[in-house]
Image 1 (tube, rainbow, N blue to C red):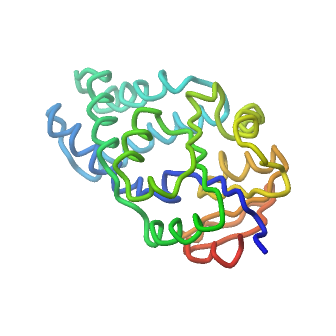
Image 2: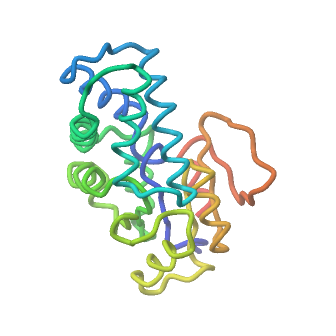
Length: 227
């Protein structure tokens, strides 16, 4: 018997290898905007990027503001006179072309799709997510993708999951599970909406005390024994 026939799967760093795509996108920005492509500079960019996404998860800014502001802050700290709007455009285009998947993502989705409905639940930029999915080997197995920009709300908000539930026939709080790597959006979102959740934690980060985590995996193949 299928325990969770509806699977709400995060995309970045749960199915798609976002870290690799992100590093390549930063390389493209550096190449085209004459910025030194060093690991030190990438770490600086990531600190700006992560701070902005954390602010977005807390509902403190819009995504349109986030994607440009992260480059504005990075360029300010680098003391470089470059166009943050152009940097962001290059970055998003490069991300949208990357379909690199995490280990076992394709085979696990292929297997699960035989007796489950798979949905992407993502806060990623809509243009990037649609472009990647359209080119991805996962496309045949994903029933639909719910992108925060189109939902008018983002994980971990209750409004975001209200949108998902309104668009999936037969979905209940008892027959689905949220699967993702992000504690602040995926797991907290599942907690907020009283949904079962599975934390994908391949980096073996410490388990927080303030969140309910029903399942924890470090290999996507473990999902086959859970759902």
